[in-house]
Amino acid sequence: MVQRVCSRCRQTFEPDEACWRCPCGGPLDVVSREFFRRSDLASRPRGLWRYAEALSVAGALPVTLGEPETPLSLWRLDGRDVLLKNESLMPTGSFKDRGSAVLMTHVRSLGMTKVVEDSSGNAGCSVAAYAARAGIEASICVPESTSGGKLQQIRAMGARLVLVPGGRDAAKAYAEQQAESVTYASHTWNPFFLQGTRTLAFELAEQMGWKVPDVVVVPAGNGTLLLGLFKGFSELLEVGITSRIPRLVAVQAAACAPLHRAFEGGVGRDWTGESSQTRAQGIAVACPPRLHQMLEAVGRSGGEVLTVGEPEIRDTLARFASEGLWMEPTSAAGLAGLRKLLPRVGRGESVVGIITGHGWKDPAE
Ligand SMILES: *Cc1c(COP(=O)(O)O)cnc(C)c1O
Ligand SMILES: [Zn+2]
Image 1 (cartoon, helix red, strand yellow):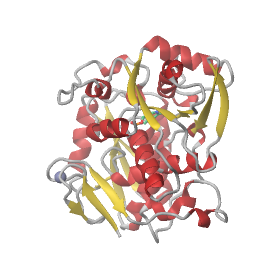
Image 2 (spheres, protein in one colour):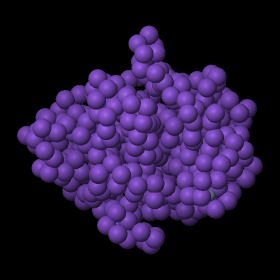
Image 3 (cartoon, helix red, strand yellow):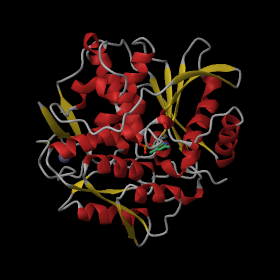
């Protein structure tokens, strides 16, 4: 049985109940006892749908754009061997497709025909694509001032772009208000999105022969990647498929680092820094709704939170590009954090970095 439960007060909600957060304000999580069995996987095609039982959308026809198993490759970085998992090869160019595929499958299975989302970035592109595939009408709310290729990507897929006067917070507030009457396909609030990002943990563990690496380093804004990995690795451990959880290291841009500040002991104060001051716009999130869960994920995995400056982001982007691997700045921020961490990682330990988004997404220098 699939239920949603408040991460704060533990109140439960049925999956089809029309609320996108708990009345107490807490974000919801999906809880389910269903999980895949390793022995069932051998005969199934590659990609996230092979873990179907664990996706909490049993019986629903998958909304899919043909998600691949993304490559895990060995890379020589600053004199060390690291593994890079290339999520930029997902259909819309970022890992967000894992979340959108499962979220849109869930939404369609409830018979919903319209969704609203607020994101001027990869989540907006991804939700627009999967909504188009599902035959669902999507409205994507973005700040009026937003420009660039991601908006074209959203528009091209037939989503309605709603230009909201003001900044990100205004776009978010507008979407939340729309969510009174239309399904809120929020990558941040809707827990079915996280059900999808968990598959990155499953796929990574399977590619490593059901072993997990010692450390996984991720860029973190709203935490859908971080939380999906933590949830996925925790469940693999719980059912006895793996024997531990990797240390999860979250990376933020120094210009917008609420998780870092909270990790260093400053919980409770909103981040008031200037989030526009970083090229890593995909993680420039001043007030992530799931901040407490993100802290818990980092803490319980034995990980940490790092910040990186703009020169480090630029340098890392250029460094990988010079070897033929082009990614967007947000993704380079995560790998800049990995480079910073590397001297402190044991020689015999395995480290995985995630290439979260493609260079075409944000090509300006
Ligand atoms: C969304 C995104 C991130 C950060 O993910 P969160 O879930 O917001 O923490 C990192 N890199 C890219 C390319 C993204 O699109
Ligand atoms: Zn609650």
